[in-house]
Structure formats: structure tokens, C-alpha cells
Length: 313
Image (cartoon, rainbow, N blue to C red; front, side):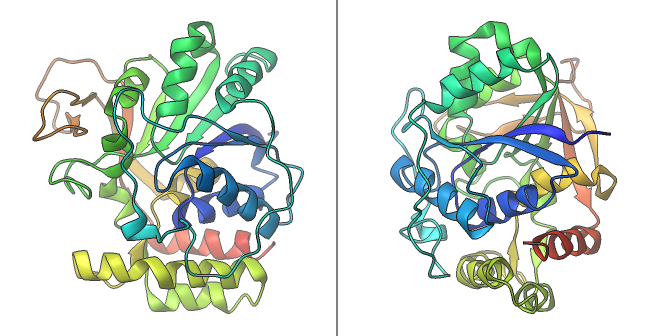
């Protein structure tokens, strides 16, 4: 099979960086048509810069990077420097990028690409808030049916919330964008906290990255060294969850993951539960299924894949 054509929509973020590195190290599985940045973990000025830093770390300066939306559709931007540090990539000391930022807006690039490529041949890998994707669908509804699939990191059910008691960060930042996306009719695969919290970077797993001895391996280890402090203190866990790499790993090795096809609705109105993914895991409503909601993964297989692929860079 030819590699799957993907666009990575992202707000790097250390775990976003690992997801991007995994994709860029897997050309037999993924053809990265471009990377689109959105405001999320840190403001857009930093996310577009961080995306280019990661491309240069991987030695993939030919991958075009585009800046997208700098704020949610109808809300003030909420960021997560308390997790990712002031740059979003705190931990390693990485040089500023020299590769250019593309002049075209990310939304226009996605629209143009979906219209140019054969229908249902481009997958959108969404690692941050869904602002860019919803804006694409609102601006050019003709491209919705041309999307092969959306694989996204966001939401939670059993694990409830990580930015509020009921909401996961990516969905909470722009719940209106999430609602538009989940109601679009596109085939959606969701990597919620329920699965990403099982992808824990324990000390032996982080040592495996560091022992690669490569710039990318060492940088990944330093990134997780930095942001694991927050998760260990918050959850009392043995390491930090690598949320976003679950998206790109799923496209390489879907057999590592398991879940259910269910209905997922987004709460946009309640101050108490805004951004909650109301996931009908037990099938107690008659609402039609609109997403595959992943609930478990083979963590050892996941980390073996990450180490092997990132070791190529």
C-alpha cells in the first residue's frame, strides 16, 4: 500500500513534537503533505515556530508549515504554559528555526489540498484545538466529503477532565469548533484521555529514548523530563502520558488500539461542563454513532514503535 497522505494540525507542545517526529520518521506509512499550526498549548506565534523547530530537529525541512487560527471561534484563548512551559517546548535547548513559514494561511492550504487530491485520500491528524478544522468546514463545506478520516487527540469519558473537572484541554479551548467537527459526518477516530493516560513514559521508557544517542532521541527524553513533573504531581503517576503520539501511532499500527464506535456530543453551553465530550460508551441513547472512541492500547508495543521510528532520525 502507498503511504497515507496526512496533514498534521497541531499546537506544539512536547507531546505534539513526539507525534510529529513519529510521522516524519515513517515515510513508508505516512506522506506528510504539510503541518498546520493553531493556537492552543501556547499562542500561535510559538506553535508555528515550534512546528518548524521540530521539522528541523527531524531533518525534514522540506515539509511546509503554515500558520492558522490564532484564537478560538468565539472565545478567549486558553493556553497551557503551566504544563508545557513558556515556549511550549521547554526541556531541550533547540535552536530557532531557519526554514521559512509559508505565506498561505493554514485554512486555505487545507482547503486547497483537499480539493486537489483525490477524494477520500487525505487524513487530518489533529493534535490540538479543532479551530482550523472547523474553520475549513465552515469556509468550504464542499471539502468535508473529501476528507478520508480525522484522527484526533481530545476528550475523555472515564478519565473526565484535565483542564476542568469535566473537560479535556483541546476540546475545552474551542468547544464550538469541536461541535462543528463532530457533526460534520466525517469518519472520526478519537484518542481521549482514557487511552492517552495509559501511554505513560516511565523511567525505563524515557531511558530508551535517551539511549538512542541521537538529537531527536535525546530531545524527546528531555521534553518528557520537563513536562512529567506536572503530571506526576497531578495524578501521582509513574510518568507523563504521551497524548498526541497516539494519533500518528494509530495510523501506523491500529492493532495497538481498541475502542468502540459510539455517539460523541460536545457540551458548549454549560459553564460547569463546557467542553465535555459526552460519550455514549454504554449505548444508552438512540443518538447515531459518529466516532470511534478509543479506550485502550498496548503500551509496550506503542513505545517500542516510538523508539524504533524516532531512532531512524
